[in-house]
Structures are given as structure tokens and as C-alpha cells.
Length: 66
Ligand SMILES: [Zn+2]
Image (cartoon, rainbow, N blue to C red; front, side, top):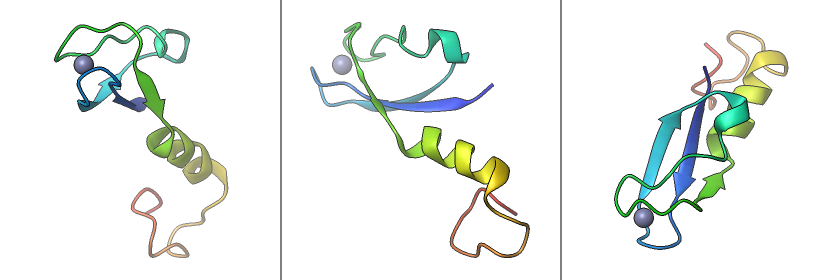
């Protein structure tokens, strides 16, 4: 299950959540319970690129491809 990073525009909280892809837009803020939070792209993008683009040992700056 992928990890998604979120940021709440209401209270500014940043958090991560393990959710299935189909439920990633249904994650409420753990601080203020706001339903509409912004999904940050870092983790999402990273898991996508690590799967195919990086070969082991070739990407020293990338923590996801060892
Ligand atoms: Zn919040």
C-alpha cells in the first residue's frame, strides 16, 4: 500500500497516510478533521519513479532505490 503525504490548508498540518489508491482523496486531517486536504506529490512521485527509473546502486541521492 503506498504512502501519501498531505498538507491541510486549514490548520497547516502535514501528515502521511497509508491508503489505497482509490481512497487517497478521502483522507481527513488528523488535527482538525477537515475533509479537503492537499495531497503533496513528493511521496507519490517518488514511489512511481523508484519502481522503474532507478537501477540499484546508480542513484545515490535517492533514498528509495537501494
Ligand atoms: Zn487540519
